[in-house]
Amino acid sequence: MTPTPAEADRPNIIFITTDQQRFDTIAALGAGHLLTPHMDWLVDTGVTYTRAYADAPICVPARATMITGRQYLNMPEGCGYFGQPTTDRPRETLPAILTEHGYQTKSVGKLHYEPVRTNYGWEHTEILADYYWEMEKRGGCGVPMDHGLGQNEMQPAISTVDESDSLTRWIIDRSARFLETRDETRPFCLHVGFSKPHPPFDPCRNFWELYAGISQPDPVFGDWSQNVADIPPGFLYPTWNLNGADRLSPEVIRACRRAYAALITQIDYSLGILFARMRELNVMDNTVIVFCSDHGEMLGDHHMGAKTVYLEGSAHVPMIMRLPDSLSEHRRLRGHRCDSLATHADIMPTLLNLAGVPGDRHPPMDGIDLLAMAQGKVDRDQLIAGFNEFYAVIEKRYKYLTCTCGGELMFDLAHDPMERSECIRSGNYASEHKRLSTLLRHDIEGRNLPLPGSCEAKSRKETRSHFAQPGFQHRNYTRRDVLH
Image (cartoon, rainbow, N blue to C red):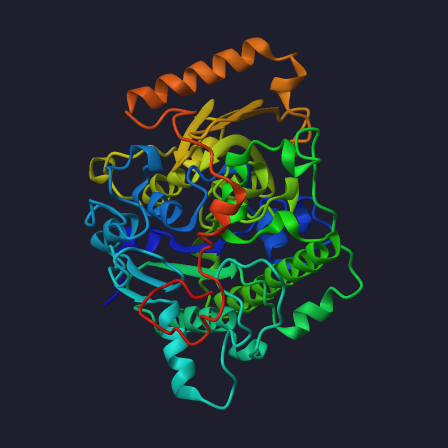
């Protein structure tokens, strides 16, 4: 069967996601201490959204936002959260609509949907559990994650399998196999879902050794975070609950940062295999590539680890879109940097538009078309976000943060992009503080959500007593899509 002209004109889509990758982890964007040649190539030939934020900086909600085009605060109660359905509209997701409109759709790697094996419109999926089952059957190549670290512990380790047997390589190999065996009469949408650099920080030894002579930058501290005791305790809850980064020594933090860098480079070099295969199969020139992470990683900044908070290390993510040569905008936007506020909800309307899905088939969404944003046709002045006990207002210049157990922070990102100087205590931003705190409070009240200061602050001891997922999960090859 020969594709119709309309089908032939529609671009293929490769949607690449990493897990827990910070915004400042690509050499072409200033991270000269990292080896990222293929992410650099995306930056040099695509559009980089320099101010992209996760509106819910944690795995499951972020992924729900990506496939629904809705910000987490606008999802129905009970959807998009751990243990709850990813969406209440399974027939109106990004993959479901693309499949309906003739795309061959496949996802390889981490999805983290609920329930686990629900496809939400993908024609076929291969999730992380499939890799572990395959490794059990294969034998003779080691046991993945046989080091005892769990899914959120921050201390570094070395992978217990070689690179060719690693989960990262499996994801690339299975993605390449799809390209080799796809239905060539249809355009395709392939999701490549890397599970790293999410903890455990366990790169394969060859990537760990690459960084033996490359020093990593020290964590960032501010006038509000030099001492742990000065930090509003609510902002430390994810750290206390997940990894205890606040009590790690500078030497251990440096080792964590080295392992984290090695994981990112392992992903990057694997992307080189995928991109080469795309060229060999002649699909590069008509394929849109979108690259982003679900959220970041504090990595010792402000004595914090993990995610969930709306500080830069946690919520600010890399986001790049490379347009194919077949689109007229490709040349004009090569290497373009767009500093408009972007978020995960923008991915779905962008890809639906690029795929030629009629507007009347688009479900209600909160997102903005990223191509129109890069062209200067649309903009976002403000992002109001919330997840669990944390809330934020992010603007072009200011960011205001608060949480239900009390405490608030405000930063002037135009002059302080790494949040070293807290504005409220300085006394120089009283009017802006009042404006943003009032705006956020009214929004929270309108949604009937818990207000800032409405909950009692928990102690460090109490929080740490609920330590999540400690160690020894390497043989827990269950149906759960959470083994990294």
